[in-house]
Amino acid sequence: MNIYNTNIQDDEDTVQWLFLDLNSYFASVEQQMNPHLRGKPVVVVPTMTDATCAIAASYEAKAYGVKTGTKIYDAKKMCPDLICVPACHEKYVTFHHRIIDEIILHTPINKIWSIDELSSRLPPNKRPVESAIALCERIKEGLAKNVGPAITCSIGLAPNSFLAKVATDMEKPDGLVILRRCDLPGRLFDLKLSDLPGIGKNMEARLFRAGITTVEKLWNISPKHARKIWGSVSGERFWYNLHGFDVPDQKTSRSMIGHSRVLDPDLRESDKARLIARRLLLKALARLRRESFYAQSFRLGVKSIDGQKWAYEITCNPSQDNFFFIKTLDELWELMEITFRKSKFIKVSVIFGRLAQAGECTGDLFEACDTKAQEEQAKNSLLTFAMDHINKRYGAETVKLGFPPKTLAEDVGTKIAFSRIPDKAEFNE
Image 1: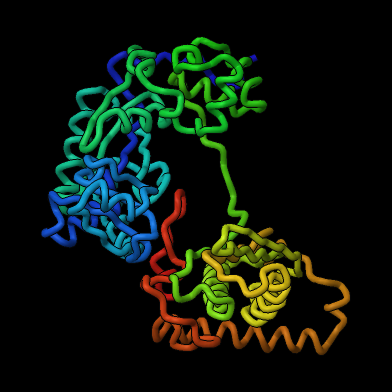
Image 2: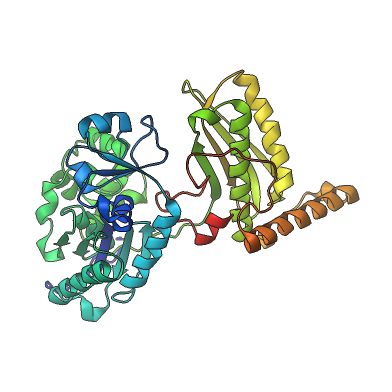
């Protein structure tokens, strides 16, 4: 029995989904904000040092072989005229919302996948191919006119969002590719397995072991065979997506909130690294409270400059209190220092897990009987929320616990990650 409806017959001249991928987004925003950067090789970096990596590259830089993840030391050898620009995540979030406001004037947005990717299930009147193409042209014109000429996108049109995303990668920058179901597999056989979303190095190796070395071979297996290779129903879902059937997205829920940071060279001593960890902790806790979550676990992680890693996780009663978690952080830091004596650190991270809303939390029975503990908790909660109120009204860190050291980058903790777009409020916490 099929778990998906495979009997849907679409008109040969229609497409059901639009997927939009902004081209070299961070670098394009920098070129939009700074016209003198347009037409030049630009990379966006987390810190202004040659020891770091590019987190985005303009197409002019990509022409020299520079890409996301390239070491700046190597990138400057590849492209002597390379221009490095420090990342400003708040700026990219602001532009993101301007872009969303423009696109929603033209078509409904079903899902925002990341800071630079979104999909739209097209209304019936926009599904005929000619109408869909006209829609894409209006979107591109609207972005150029109302957001900026340096902001370009590649758009894919297909029977499902998976294939529409695949189509966006077929023509960059500023592309428009149409994959109709009646044309499948068509251009798909020109792709490598790793070009398909969801097939990383490990999955590609698993496919190779199963004798699936090309997209054509993957196309020709059965849904049950795909399920066996993946070891779960995910393989069957992938097969139906690849063949153009509209598979509903699986719902996900928030499971953790955290921040990490690669430390500036002069902040790698233990005392300074601990203060950065504390700043990340307080920022994550502010976000936890803003989203009305309580954490029931906390994890501290560090990476030493020689590549050694250490991490420790504790479980706790549901909490969102600054003072409790600062104490916990200090205790874990002391425990960590037993392993890394006199070490320097290159990265720190804090993660709150087992998140729950207030109504889902179960407190500690013995603590509930301890009047002194209850009074202490109530006092700390009042202080924490008073700090939130003052900082929200008068600006981030108007009131703060301790004195975090100055960093090269403006924002500590608040950064854009795949599938996570910071709220504007987060830049003021």
